[in-house]
Length: 456
Image (tube, rainbow, N blue to C red; front, side, top):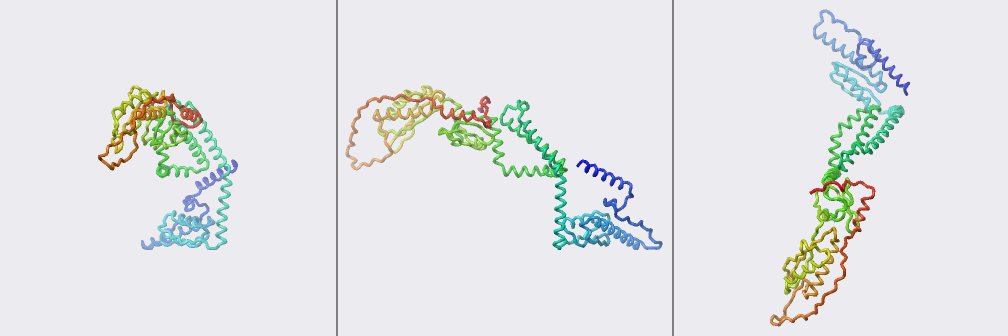
């Protein structure tokens, strides 16, 4: 290969020296060696008119153009069947060529000659099947030979791409260049950009070795339009990427926080570059796209340790509402896990058709007690206390009086005996939280930083 390259260099040098020593003529203008030289122009005869002189000059110029084109076409095998005629600077090309590329080449060569005003390209394609197949086979054979000759360069280009790919992975895997970047998502993005930049540098070098820099320039020139098309096609992916960056900077929740995002409730497992992963109370994984998380409503139950619960009870319309309120508040105060400050409340909320709705409110410290367990215990105790006090909890119903003057029978009095309260289990349940911690401990991308400042 090296000997061939040297031989090619010597040939190019010899051709350059010959072109520099030979007198400048039509063949040298077109870069076609061996074309016949035109005879020197003879001075016009004495006594000839100006129009006759111009006609003689035009005829002589047409003859020179025709001779140059014939000489040029004679040196190209595919154009040897082309016939040339020139009249007043108008070149007419006829004959047959084996391919459309040869027809276009003949027209381009004719247009490059000085003095040509117009080219009438009437060349036809060869209709003979044998000649067409022979031309196609010759073209394929030349391409195959060219590919075989390019195999060493292709191997070198492929080796360069592999080396730069490994170099990109090595540079992206270093830690010290990215220590000053505090944000995990930005660190990950910087590593990927460095890796892609190194790989692109290797691709450009490989194209330079293959002498395909024009292809690289075309690719770079269309990068803007290509990026615009990709922006429309992958708008959701780009939106998720930007949302991931903003969420990693804002940190609206911490690992294992209990949150509700657009009605989906669970403990935060991790924040990836595409989605936020939640572990529901039932132990199921929920992946929410980061674009929806960033634009949606986030309820963080863990950020504030105090959380209020409420329960509604429908009291009979004939019952003492104040007594029902006092009784419910006393029961809530005695319920384990319900805080004394803020104090429990009982509010008359609604006057229904067959009952009056009283809503009981109590507060729970989620760090010390399980919210759902405390709420369940409060509901049970309030209901039993109202039953023991003889306060009816009627279902929605209609009462029909057939005899308005008839007195309503009195309800039999019930013996009210205090019920023994079983011990309440209101301790925090750590099952889901431990499962979420185990999920976080497993290897996987996570953009949440427990030590990062939280969004206010």
